Image (cartoon, rainbow, N blue to C red; front, side, top):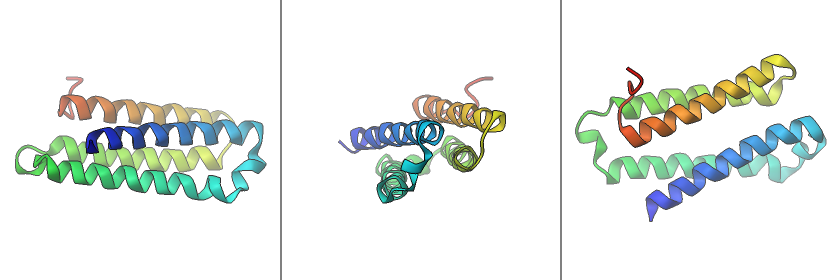
Length: 120
C-alpha cells in the first residue's frame, strides 16, 4: 500500500513538473496562480516523506545503503535542475530539463536494482 502511494506521488510529481514546464512556455501567467505554486511542494513533500517511511519500513539502512545515498544526491541535483528550468529560457532551459529527466531515470533504475553503479 505505501509503495503504491509512493509510486503515485512520483507520477504526480513528474506530471506536475512537466506540466509546469509546458505552461511556462505556452501560458506563463497561469503559473502565478496559488494552486500552481503550492501543489508541487505538497506533492513533493509527500513523495519524500513516503520515501523515508519506505526506507525505514524496509529496514534498508541495516545493510549496504549506498544506493539510497546515491538516490538522495541525485534527487538534490534534480531539484536544482528543476529550479533552473523554471527560472530560465532558451537552450540552457531545455538542456537542464533533459538533465532533470535523466536524473529521474537514474533514480528509478537505482530504486529497482538497489545498485548505484548499475551502469558498470
